[in-house]
Length: 404
Image (tube, rainbow, N blue to C red; front, side, top):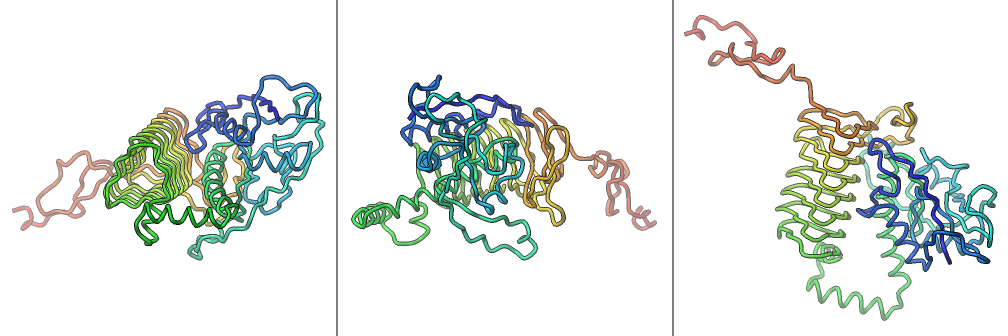
């Protein structure tokens, strides 16, 4: 089968890159689409083929190979996901003609390459319910239904979708591994286990999980680091006592000592500083996050920098989190969401950012200086002082004894 891509070229604020350049596990969305097509045996062409049906998709649609297989099996028409729980978790801010109607279709032979006029066809993605993590009672309101599978599809219309497609892509990797195991014959399963045990030379769970990581080249990983179920690029550095789980690290990425990275994607040359914490997030190439309040569900643009002690809020205990779209504040449908930090933006020490915020490219944010001591002329030995408008000011007047 052949495929045609409709290019919209719509930029995604605050990054303002074309949609096709959005990173999906460190691969541009356009390349990720082509890889899925290739895996499904579909050839991308520049003009509709004559006399045969063909696949049609937009440059803002992320999909997996299994999603293509499911659509082709369902027959001609535009893919419609008729799954209420899936839409409740993923539908917010997707700009579609109707709920669940994706910009992915099988077009009848000799029909024009456009979605208008195509018949919606309900596609079963074969998703399954996944048990949510055991959260503190105060956090359970933020949990959304978790329906996952190897067949995934999602539109990219907002920076929150950059987070979502990377999270779904990581989940799809795990689901494909599970499905691959289920599709193996029993002899293949036995052989796989034997090879794994011979390589690991241990039956300990931690050693096995470490061995299931995929290495793309030489990496410098300290022996005290915990690295499980990851994809590790060439030249990656992981320091002493760091913990990295279920994440993808591109070439030259660094996780410094005592840092923690979970379910995240680190671009080429990106860094998580010592004692830093990164969960469910995306770092573009050469971005750096330092130790702070811990960064979750956030996107950090190319060469962005977040200083030690900065904080990004990520959990709303009241209404769902609003985000900016087309100059207005709209509902993200989420209670758990961090922020988007634009390309080359710098976030200084003690800066606190609210959830759902997008910081423009090249922004430079610093914290108020009123509590930053800049003048110590009034300081006397043994007299407690506090910062008042930048000046170290005695809390009380010194006694005659203190003066001497």
